[in-house]
Length: 223
Image (cartoon, rainbow, N blue to C red; front, side):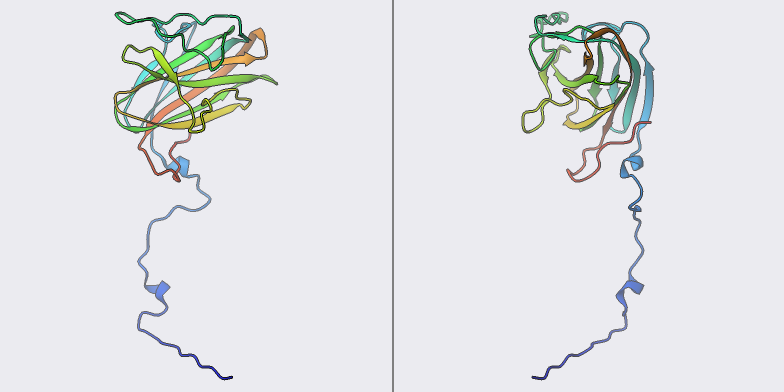
């Protein structure tokens, strides 16, 4: 059996030599480092309060492209299923349903809070570093706040799992789509080891960035 083939030439051959150059990012570059965020730092000194409405709780209003870094510490760790979380109230509002943890009971150690209010529709990025002792377990929970500034719902993943619960890593990070005008509470507490003298330094970076496609890298590197 015989066959044949033909070669057709053109003036633009080879094509790669006539392609216009385009800007690209090298595969070795961490794309998260390319996201530009203006950061503000807050150092928490002393007791910042036990509930979200206490006046010492750090708070920030974030437009897209802005972030806040909160430096603090979790003093004491533990959890008691027999405890009742403290009631949270605000002026002219009914007390909240004491939304505090994803399971019955309350933390016996320090509970730290950061409140952010969004100016734009955005992706809310949360990235925390916790100096955990061996065996330490930390919750870094995300709550939606109502118009009174009271926590009303724990943020969950599409499969129903609570975001940020039972972390055994020194770094905790997650992201969630949020909308302009919403307020969110990031709450940190350690429940292992069961030790009132434990102290864990924390660095929490919270930022708002433009909402990107699901396959993109939505969050910046902490400063």
